[in-house]
Each structure stands twice: as C-alpha cells, then as structure tokens.
Length: 451
Image (cartoon, rainbow, N blue to C red):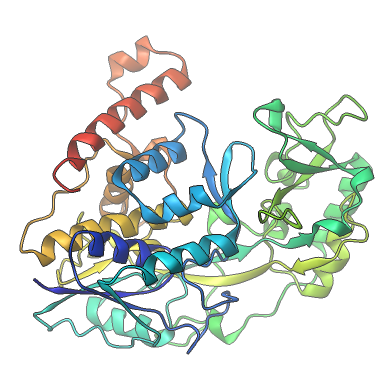
C-alpha cells in the first residue's frame, strides 16, 4: 500500500489525513508553521480559521446545509468538531475558533497512523512510486511551493485577493445603542445589530470611500515571477470600501442590509445596520459580519468608530487582506482531484478552486477518501453528480476555462430539475427541497462502499 503525504495543516489537509488514516492508510502530514508563517495566519495551529468563524447556513434545504448534511453522513471529522464547538449564530454554524483548532489537533495527535512534520515542503517529488501526495497548502501557498507546482503543471496560476473582518472587544460595545435580533425574528436573536440613521450612514460612507488604503506589499506579487499584479478581488468577499465605491447604497443591499431587523426602540427597520457575530464560547468578542477591508489600521480605527455603539470600541483585530492562489482546475484536475498529467498528486482545498471553509473541508474529505482508495490499488468511485459534493467538484473540473473563478456551493452548481417539474413546482423552496432529497439519496447510495 502506498503511503500518503499531505501538505498543509489548514482545513482540507487535516480532514484528508484523518479520512485516509481512518481507512487504514499511513499518512505524513506536513505543515510549515511555525517554522515559516504566512501573511494572514496568527498561530501555528491546525485548522486555524483566518477570516470569519462562520461555516454558513444551517437552514434546512439550503445549499450550504445540504453540503454539510452530506459531510455529516460521510463522517467528516472537522465538521463534527465544528458542531462540537458551535457558538450562537442564528441560522449559521459558527465556531469558537480556538477550541475548534484545539480539538482538531487532538484528533490528529490521537491517530497513530498520522505522523506530523513541522517543516516547509518545496519539492513535490512526483516520481516517487511509493507515495501519493495531497497538496492542500491553501490560498497562502508559499512562493517556493507555488513555483514548484507551476513547474509541475506547466500552467500559470490565477489569483484573487481575500480579506479578513475586524473583531471587537464585547465589553467596549455601547449596548444602549444596539440591539439583539435575528433577521425576520427567525431562530434565536444571536446577532448584535448596530442601527444607522440616514445621516449616520452618509457620514460613514463618506469616510469609508475617502479612506487611505494599505500600500501593496511584496507578498502581493505573483509568487513564481515576482511581478506585481492588479488586485482581483473575489466577488463573494469584497472589501467594504470597494463595495461602497460601486454606489452609495450598495452596502445597504449587502453587508449593511437592514431588511427584517426591526429596532425595538422604533418598531421599524433602521436605514442601515452593521451586524456583530459572537466570536467564541465566552462571548467576550464579536466580529463585524462582512466587514473585511484593505484600509490602514489607523483609518479603520477612525471609521469603524462611526458605527453606532462602537464609538469607544476596542478592536482586538483589524481587517486585512491577503493573497489567495488557486490552480486552473478545469485544465488540470480530474473529478477525483488528481492532476491529469501527474495522477499521483491530488489537489484539495482552496488551492483547487473551491471557496469557503465548509467547501475546503469537503474537498479535503473527498481527497482523503479518493487517496485511500488509490493507495490500496483501487479506482476511486466519483462522488455522484446529483450531490452537493459531487456538483462542487464537477464545477471546478468542468467550468468554462476562460471564466473560471473559485466557487462556493450554490444550487446553481447542482443539476437542474427537469423542465416539466420546474413548471409544475413554482415555489422555489419546494424545488430546492426536491433537489436536496435527490442529492441525499444519491449521496447515501454512493457512501455505502466507501465507508
């Protein structure tokens, strides 16, 4: 049986390692931190959540819910730890990021088939006949490893820029100016809402759109060539100042949307609102939902204190931006996440072109399952197209090569219902439920021989 080498200790790598070990494979798990850190990580912990602490919606029959339901049925270990460290977040699954990382580390330490190596990997050694490699080094893959991957694939990387939301000390929030509420009062009121009048919003937008941005750093250069590149933000995670420049009301239809958040003091929706989500189990810190930005820290301190309730706030972490790298998966990957030209190497996580925490864990889960099958000399069974996991992988490996961009799970990626059913079932929620039912049935059938 081949040994499995996994590079990357973020989300996809540990999940892949644990899945492969569970299936009887010997695994070497490599993580370069703390020997070498990245521009965005703050610790050397496994499964560190760099951006927000949310793994998205748990509302039944939504696409993120479906993906997680499939993962739970498949025995995703990191998702189980996310469930175990969940903090109140309305209809979303959010975690205490410190406890989450701690529990993932304990899972890895307790698995005798996994050996951990704290060192940077710069060579992929594709000619080793006794080793399968899963490259899950993430969007902050080091320059040396990125160059090695480019050598191996003969293809240019694509890149976009992702951002991190600020975190505020809960004790510094003026609770007399804010209120707890869930949108449309669905679920529990877990979010702190900071309401704006029109005048407060206009003042905030003016400050935001004229603020001074962070200057480009050396790490914002293309890793293999060292050349500077135009910032290409991921549309699903735009910095707030970039969103604001697209129109003065754009934020009111995005992260500052007031719809369904009735202010108990007025009995009405505010003009705009900033939501704060609990960051940990102690509830002593909150992150500003959707407030990733690329502004200088001094500017952030000035502008964010224009938010009602945060006038005297203490920020435990300011927003920042980091460069994300991913391969051109439609050209390079098979549906079993193997490189077409080098099938002994699999790519998982955000490096493969999926976007989001849950999607990265799901990708690592599949890579671990596939690699275990290959290591035993078997041909892996591809995840069913009807499933969320199968559809996400199908997208990154079959997308339009000229328009490929990383993707979150959405219903648009799943096979559409037959036209006669679409005409018969007008209600979108009913159509989504039917798609979920089909997906889970196909997924359950696929799982039987893989577990």
